[in-house]
Amino acid sequence: MKEMSNLLKAPDKLNGNTLCLLNTRFGKLKVLNVCSERKNKHVYWNCLCDCGTVVGVRGAFLNSGKTTSCGCNRKVAATAHGRHDTPEYCSWSNMIQRCTNEKDDSYAWYGAKGVAVCSKWLSSFEAFYADMGLKPGKGYVLSRNRDKGDYEPGNCSWKTKSENAKEVNDRRFNGNNGQIDIINTP
Ligand SMILES: [Zn+2]
Image 1: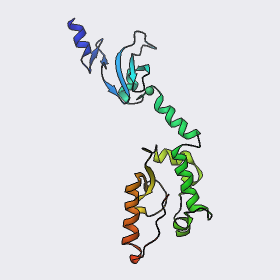
Image 2 (image 1 turned 90 degrees about the vertical axis):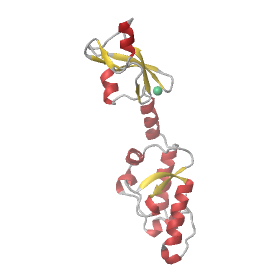
Image 3 (image 1 turned 60 degrees about the horizontal axis):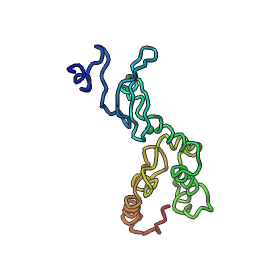
Image 4 (image 1 turned 135 degrees about the horizontal axis):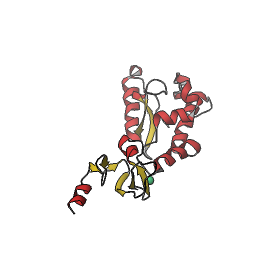
């Protein structure tokens, strides 16, 4: 009984040399109990993922941060890469259109004013997605830092529509020698 209560304390030692991970959280995974079976002598832990799936994960992979979900994190990323109807793909596509397509409704405020997309992003949605990640939510837009410069890593972030509109306003009312541009930010 005493042994058991020691075992439940985390982190602690299990069998002398393995960290006890019971009840510890790693990302989306919460450790439930130790797997009875071992593969290649490694200790595996049964974990409950936030999505409801129970998986056995090698302790070393939990400790190192290599595994932080049942695999559902990876599925979200893979889906966004492969599909063309994700919010991130729409943002990427619209960004390129307004900077390069003279027929785009917003071209006058972007491409025509010299706003460009860096070559890395221009040629690859995957590169854009790797740098920008998932759009945090529905009300977010792709925004340039203070509404200036090109679309490139380090100068862009996902912002809420109102945050973005404020930056566009700040620049257009305070810059341009007081001249006010018509605001048309997709
Ligand atoms: Zn999951």
